[in-house]
Length: 225
Image (cartoon, rainbow, N blue to C red; front, side, top):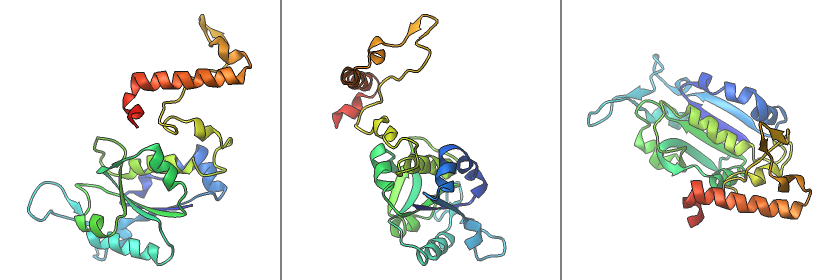
């Protein structure tokens, strides 16, 4: 998979891709991450990429020209399944969306900043808008890291045990069941006996029951589907 991220602040993005699972995925050539500084596509000597809003109002808006030039440059080299803009106004990110995007070969992610981007980018260049939650960040860079992590971990070969992702929360519209490890007893807090029984049929039944109960208690909205 190839992911191209268009940003004004590439330095905000580098660190998350330099450790743990994301680092291993890149080192194994399972994914290639490219950062594109939007200012490199500005044509004035000041590298200006933003301007005031038409109609007045507070906050600067990222101009259409540098984004269009950057996307055209990338599309001349690769075919992209999605051009994603990260915005609080987008479709809320779900496991289902991450699963689908993990099957892509090439995607572009646009990180907004300031007040946002010119609407014409969204109307004519963007194919999908995604929000990571009902809140506003200073820019799309942190959201891009979250989106990439949620996608990359699903690529075959990235996780040491490929079945691990199948039992994650939201994969089956349920929150994950409770998990435990050694020691068996700590401060008189004990691991449920069923998990020590070796009877995997009963263990799976216990896990399914507890996942359902947890979902009913914490996220009953998930069960509506």
